Length: 249
Length: 390
Image (tube, rainbow over all chains, first blue to last red; front, top):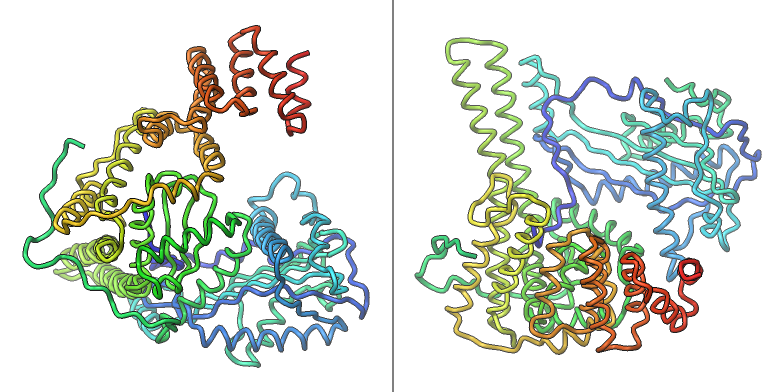
């Protein structure tokens, strides 16, 4: 009730995981008619949120600083390689200071709300808001003020990344095996993430990809490459992006 | 409070812990602690740049001084203090030394010693590494719960003669493990209270203040409940899901410890008042927006004590005007007038007075609002107020 202790991690003690919540859901959307300028886009990478750890026997997230550091390194390399292949340039901004830091914090917070709304009210077909029901509609924006983020960088787009990996611990796997013998399904591990591209001139969200069950071990360079290719699925200008917004089913 | 509970503390020995040894710039040790710190380090980056944090270097350094006076000079340098604009009474501590103080706490503490007691409690969580220990306990408990769940599922699936008893036992184990998470949290809070009292003992502050604070917290919660036509909380019982000891229990053992200490000290009220003077109007305005008439009225009365100052009278006027019954508007006008007697330059009091009078169909309203506009020609609502007096 009062004078609490900070608890950064919520325990999820659900023993029985529901089948696959992601199947009914779309995974990515792209603004209709949006075309990324061929081989010239300068993309500002916003400090990605990356958490890697283990999943305890009871299903709690156990953050691991070493794995997270490895993943940050591997994902950065893999991302730069993937974007270079598309002909885009990834800019990594210096950590902002002073009022710029507040602006950055504001837009990072706004983006997480925006991505959450898109996933909840557009990608989840049964839960669509009336304005999002039109076929191929993908109208989301952060407002033109987001241009402030690009000041002095010359970037045209901002890329936001979120990635969380929970690797099932040995205890969790043993529990899973015993539970299977009792015909109870226990999910071991969780690998979710999303990535979004924002036009820094208009503030519009031009592409968002969210995946709640991804592959690739981000702790290794090869796995990180696979992960990045999944995070950047349907990225504007990549081969699959010709498909309309509702393609990923 | 009329209810009395049995003294929870054994009389033998000194119940207060000795202060742990302190070495500066502690680095997290081991996988779990490093993981936790990594997470909150990232959270702290976001909080540091957030607009929810009150940016006032003077207030910041004052609070830092209070922590130093409470827990001692080198210790206090290991925390970073963030004042978050939140009218609820609370403060929290992250494992890496990020201390979050809500403005609702700053409004409610009556003197610096009370503030020091609360900040000492939070610091104790940090010094005792409670987040880490709590994390490990929760992990063990949820592990037990998961295995008990599998045992129950197995018994259910494969049946046999003892299946029913196995399922019942497994459920009991799960309940016990789940309850242990909250019991453990309550024990940590108790430890933090005790260590906070140990800090107070070594400091210049009066240790009796901590219990005083809890007494008023209970009375305010009672007033809130009364205003909302709710049953008040029982302060003498521990609920299954309670993360903290019952407030009455805390008040009781803190009072006993303070009496046993037999130490008087300063309350530092003048310093607190001086530090908060610039912020109090804002904190009072935030409190009034909570839409908690009875609780706020109690709080204002407590803050005033024997002396109703102009800012409290103005706040009370705003509170009554916001409820807006015809009788409240009359009371509000009275409070605004009393505030203006003490502080004739308070333009906002003329605004409140005028609006209250207008709703009471008092022809003097226009005059009050004109005075407001004359005193504050650039007010954000000047255009709107002008339309009212044409």
